[in-house]
Length: 466
Image (cartoon, rainbow, N blue to C red):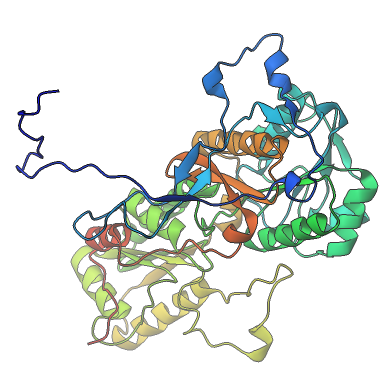
């Protein structure tokens, strides 16, 4: 090395700096935490007749993924005293804590439908059977209540062969039915020693209780969850499966609303999209469709009347273009909709039941036009594609994603990890403690670039009153 060589610099002439990262590994629950007598054994992947993994194929405890990757180096030091959280990287381990021939695995889907459910089920069956040689895999019917109220369905590779081409869930699903002791008792009685739970935030909260009860009883049972929510509201991970398909299908509804709006004098196309507490589908569908004039999401309160309100904006847009398209997430505007005591309730999963913002907004738009533009032509075409979107098959991106999620979960459980969720962080698959992810929320940050892009392409109001 030439000590007299000039220091390397950026293009702007500023010197390049090197950093060390102060990373802290988030600890993942492991079966040996409460079953110290368990001994590891070599994975059967090593003795596969056809596939011979390279050394780089296997991961170890030192393979991690850093959660935060974006920094402003003018204000933040990567080597600062505050640790940067990291998570175990998902993938196969050379040492596992199960004899695959003794594994009885259970798979359950809970909550509402989502594109990709059948793909996850299929890949869990295929991965367990073909990679590890697990002989007994069972599907639990109708959600959590199926553990104790219905007979399980024996699954095999031949049975699930074409499931990824079907929407919904072949195992059926339901909300509610969570009875902790009945569920764990049934798991014990059936001899399941691996449990794979597919569901959203309510399901994940239940999965945490199941894991804690299994740990309390010191049972050799691994529990893994695969986060499912079309809304993309599960925190920490990059996105939840089904989301990309939902955005793609939402575009079709927006396109139909745009055609309807363009085909009538002073036409408004109103589309309600999924998003109870977060507006990710509405945001991404708006950016990708380019036909939307205004996007309304739960994280950004809006108002109708007065300067800077929705009616003033639509008045100008109709005068300018003769039509407009409005996208509203189902959780937006809930504070403005008249609510009776009877309407203040929760569903069986414990989630609040929202009033129909689409129907309400359609009525308000008609009243506004009748009041301020009496005798002028006007029409509102309202489209609610919710159930159509939830029931479709996953697109190619989500099918790939579901496959990797399922196989990641299998490798983690086989390695003895338990009480975890498999999911991508910054594009790489990781294992995240279930109790951590069950209490986090992925909300739209209205101060970041994504929402700024929406505002810039729609030029809609910021809905901040003067």
